[in-house]
Image 1: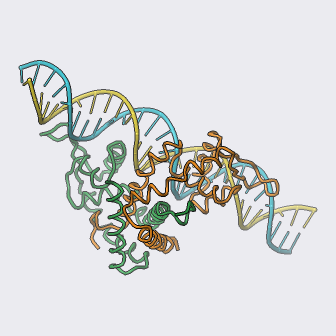
Image 2 (image 1 turned 135 degrees about the vertical axis):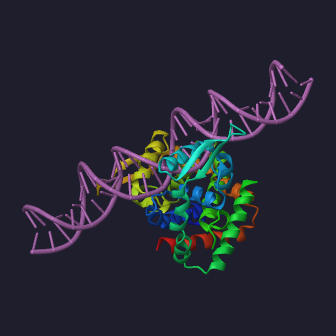
Image 3 (image 1 turned 45 degrees about the horizontal axis):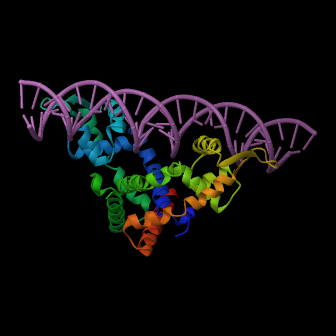
Length: 140
Length: 140
DNA sequence: GGTAATATAATCGTGCGCGATTAAATCGCA
DNA sequence: TGCGATTTAATCGCGCACGATTATATTACC
């Protein structure tokens, strides 16, 4: 357990995350999206019309990050933001037609990333599960 | 290979990195450091007096991120920034006495993180190596 | 029914990351 | 020797992250 960067699991995660975002960058540039914006849209493609809080629980971000991000998506015409009629504290985020259509334009991305990883799907899946388990342990 | 967040290796890395930084936060708050500042100091604790570029190659950051960060470390009295006499393009970053002393104050951190991970050292090491290999593949 | 407690999103300030550009020093090469 | 190419930091603008606070709506409870 040394204090050198190459030995640190935290740095491995940190630098791998940046490397991953570097792979996504050109793919997302084609869609005019940033990486966090892509994550939010991914959550909405699975389940449309979610509150800011519900989205935040999935992408692990708070309203202080999400609110400006969602305003940018709204300005781009990808989502709408409307106060919930039943509970006016909540703001519902809903995909526009353009936002829904972008799902098809993004459909090729996962395969590109898989290929770039140089791993078999099952190896990548196993690694993902280990990283997810570590994350959940760290969060507890 | 679905498009759901829990299935995405990129999101596993992204959220695990944030969870890791959340673990470091209270430990680094005691030292008055941010996480990237801690990485830079870690590199300097291994090898003092490095150029901005050499540091950047280790922590995987460019001068546009490092220069302001290093200025903050200089303001806090942890490092000095001086133009290299032989090659005036380069700026040498050198630890002050205070910066060197902080290594001892940070010595307990790796063990804290290991414990929080809930994994045996050898398991964490194996996971780290897999993540590092993925990072290097993605960078290529 | 009124009021304290809670939940939700928004706002603000600071510090990264990073693409693009700029300024200055050094190097390569005829 | 001179001059274009390269290297190195710094600068600028934008978009996250996140701690702390605020405003408003809802719920709990007496």
